[in-house]
Length: 477
Image 1 (tube, rainbow, N blue to C red):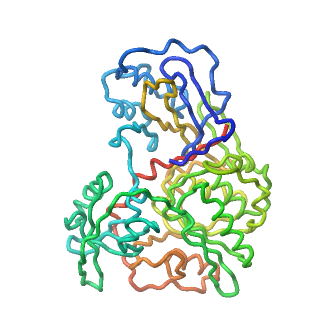
Image 2: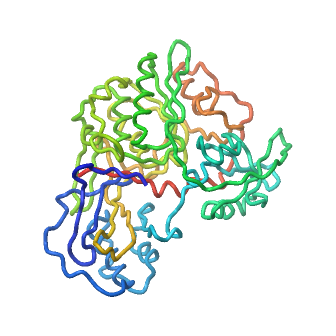
Image 3: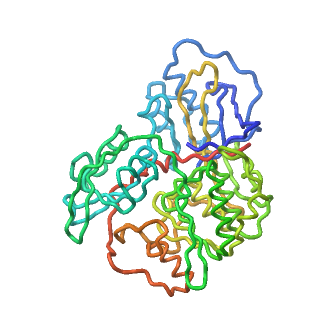
């Protein structure tokens, strides 16, 4: 979870009535949280004593949702005292709501883990008629320094089994979920040579502490007479903003006139990083230019955040000033953005919020469609009575032109599924189908995309499906 906090004056929203006493809330994109004006100064009633009951938990949830929830007018009048916590929460959500979640940090069973940050590997399972079970696993990304990388796994590698069971269209999801929720497992690598598939020795996937520098690749590609910057960015993490700034400074120093930003697996993160990238790409911006607009229910109101405010409160480390970005600002009239099936949250916000300021040419697949923000709500009393944390959707997001409403995802101008062209190539390879398409547009369609090894593959499972729900981005007050 990526949290944007205010170092010296954190945003704390309190509602000291009913069961939501001293709840702390922070803005998020696909998490954005509330304003100080939302707090109430009435005296808190006496803190309950004795064992926490299901009734108390459910009342706390309902009271929290009444304040923050975007669809609070659809909530029931009273809590169901008999339902288990998660079941109750799901029962009161709007039918339009795909992303609000509740979890107990002390109960791992309630938390949706992310395969990439558990094992250091991201993969898809796709149809492959020549494989033993008719499907095959394809490694999309491996975190450098992870156990998976040490064991030799690389982007483009194949596997045919999980926990020694041959993958099929019927068992791929449960086997993958077994791996995701378990404490380890194995995959069976395979070498593909036409229709001949040769299995290799088992590779163990071991959970570990994964530290990912999201700036995986930053290179300059010569395309005709033009210098094209290519950035593969996998998460919006403020702790690595210095790498981000260095990449853009290098692009500028080398005379880059076109830019490809690869977000095909990016599941979001920090708003400050999204504002930073926007400011370094687009022309004609000032620190007072609008970065994002967001509107909630009648209690939460309508708000606007400019670039200075967005940059001022990183999730970690020191704030970034707008002026400090000048050495990396490219002032581009257009940018190419590569998207995928898991591009979500801050990544979608970047795509949408660049559009008022520069031309965005999107290539790849339609994004997830997380166009609303949520708040983080938890009981901050001492002692804490209720251990649950809620992320209720709270705001609709829009860019400086007031454009949002991408619930069905943001559709690219050029739709390409990288899985239809095998094997996957290294990040930054000019022959990668998404990159090649961008270069063909830059060259005036003079560069043809290779047509060999083109198939139509069905996606059976994508390892980061759960991560798109948990993407968190926190706003200042």
